[in-house]
Amino acid sequence: MSDGLSLLVVDVSEAFEEMLKATEREYLVDWDGISPGAYKEKELYRDPIFERMHYPYGSLRSGLNAIVDTTRIARERGIPVYAVHYYTGNSDGEEQTCLSLQPYISEKNRYEKHVPSAFGCQLANRLEADDCRHLMVIGYDRDDCVMATVKDAVARGITVVTSEHCMLTQNLRDRRASSLVYFQENTVFLGKLVDVWNYIRSATVPSSF
Image (cartoon, rainbow, N blue to C red):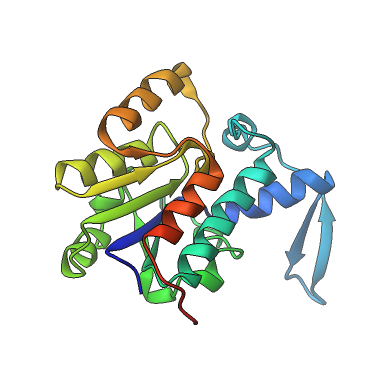
């Protein structure tokens, strides 16, 4: 079981993961339900938001791997793990927590939000009911939804743990420097991915699931 530490994954969606895979193969494979129905190869749509996304320590794939591996380790160590995904109202069926994360986050711990902060949905009530006072926040976007979530958690008196090694970003308006200053001054800020995993280990004992 954990020593009070919980993990929250912000806005790492199935849509992002599918776009990443399509970009890596340089074309989209999608289901065409028109009779007789089959998977079809389609031209890759270049999503402008996805095109702006990056990970400061390597490829987007390495950033996703860091988030998935951190979530897996947290679950293996008995930490309560939650996720939120952002829903705009224009669903294409992929507004959910990405498939690579779902084995480590139970369905009852996945929440939908309509505002940047994860505390703007029912997850806030759940964390309060679970007496969450120590929360590691990872995911996307470092300067927007992650930042809004971290600020709300800090305002609630929660000890927040962050690391840029577990965050994706668009870095709009070049906000990296100001974001890192905020994290360094207001959270337990971990400088390396290995520090993140050791922090989880130090706060927990192993658990099976």
